[in-house]
Structure formats: C-alpha cells, structure tokens
Image 1 (cartoon, rainbow, N blue to C red):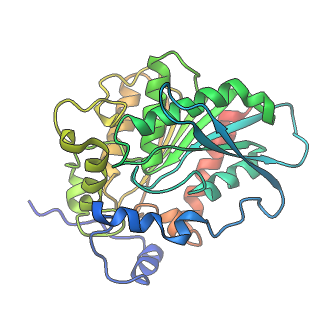
Image 2 (image 1 turned 180 degrees about the vertical axis):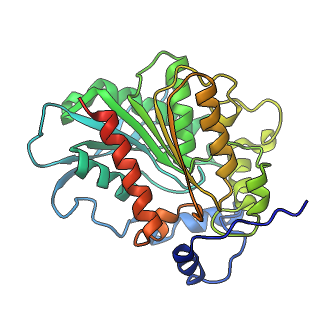
Length: 323
C-alpha cells in the first residue's frame, strides 16, 4: 500500500519550502565531522543570558565510573527567587546523538525558566560514532546524579527536577527516566519529551510515509542509529536504555509530556510510547501537532502552530510545578 505523507501546516510548508527542495535530510556518517565544525552549531545565535536576566556558568563534574568528566551548562535567574528554592530543568540536547553541545536547544528551555522561575542545567554527553551506546545515556545519568546532589548550591530544589529534551535529547530523556527508575536513582518530578527519538527499528508507517520528505527522514534516522548502535541497530538485543521504545515495562515512570508533529518520522513511535505509558497505569499528556514536521517549533518559531506548541509545554509544566 502506498503511504502518502500527511500535508504540512500551511505556514510551516511555506517556511520549509523557503530553504529549498525537500530531500532526505540529516548527516551521513562521513558528514558528521564537517557538520560539527559549523559555527552555528558551536556558537548559538541567541542570547543565553536572556538579555541579562540570567547568569550562566560552565561546570565540570564527574562522569560515569571510569569515564571522563562531563560538562554542565547552568543558567539561573539573577532576580531573587519568588518562593524558596527554584525548580530545575535538566536538559539533554538534540542532534541525533551525533551532533550538538550543551548549548543546543537551550533557547526553548530558557523560555520555561523565565516563565516558571526555574534553573536550567544542560548536559554535554559523548557523541556517536566515536562514543557509541552506552556512553551518551551514562553521561546524562551521571549529570543527573550530580545535579540532584548539588542543586542547592545554585538555588535549585532537588525534589523538583524535571528532565527534558528534544529529538535525540528527548530519547535520552526517556531513557534517563527508565534508568533512574531501575537504578533507584533520583526520581524526576516529570519528563518533557519533545518529538523524541525512541525507536532504532525505524520501521513505523510514519517513518515510511516521510521518507525523503521534511526534516529528519528515515535515511537520516538510520544513519544516526547506526552510529549509536552499529550492527546491533534494528536487531533483537537492543536495550531499552538505548532505544526506549524497546522497553517492555513503562510503569513507575514520572508524569510525561510528549509531543510530535503529524508530518514527521517519529509520529507513530511517540504515539505508541504515550499509549503504553497509559496502559501501564502511568500519567502522560500527548499532543500530535497537525502538519508539524520534525523540529518545527525551533525551525519556524514565528508560526501559529509553533507558538501553540510552546505554550502547551509551559502550561503543562506550570500544572506540574504548582504547590
């Protein structure tokens, strides 16, 4: 059966067309080193201080046992706290687990910090293919351990840590929640999974529908998962901490916010993950944004759908963090 891609939201379609013809997007393994050297990946174009509202600090903290130290980027409001220790947003960046730094995607999370009087801690993890699974998720877990133990040092509340990430960072965040549950580590108050990269099998109807269309298609997804897992990708022995869609037990997880576009590769794996959280007796809020492509809210933040998506996340976080 021919799988016809769903249409893009009209505003988003115009924005996507403006950058040129749609082609299978994302890096090949040979492209990764060159892409990492692009200036916009190394130095974000946005103001990380929020116009002087935030203080930024780089910290080096212990990594996993036997592994290098990791870097945390901490952003905290300069104004006095409104009501005691601040909630903490622990952020894992996107980039297919092959690109990015702890500055990537922070502009989205800073909007939450400004609205909710929160501290942001963004973790830098080792990237594939040089550092395949489990390097990335173990770094993210080590950063969470340090953050939970030291939150008070930067005005944060260790009992109100929300873990969050987009795309590959969303997948790592989902894996982090599983790992923290199973190791009886710090329990996040909630998890925000923005169009998360969850399933190495890359074989859902939406993955086939969107092949060669939009942003981050099935070819790019295959490249990234192969970098992380090598020959194990798609096979029977991939653990849930590498690809959370593989988890057989989604009980006992923190409340989750999940969102995804209807016109993107990850749609079906995200919908399935939310459904299985409910089936396991858990709490999840799911949004499927009609006509949204992968990363639409960062790519075209001026559009109506992007503004709606961003507002929905803040609304959920406000409810979660309410006294």
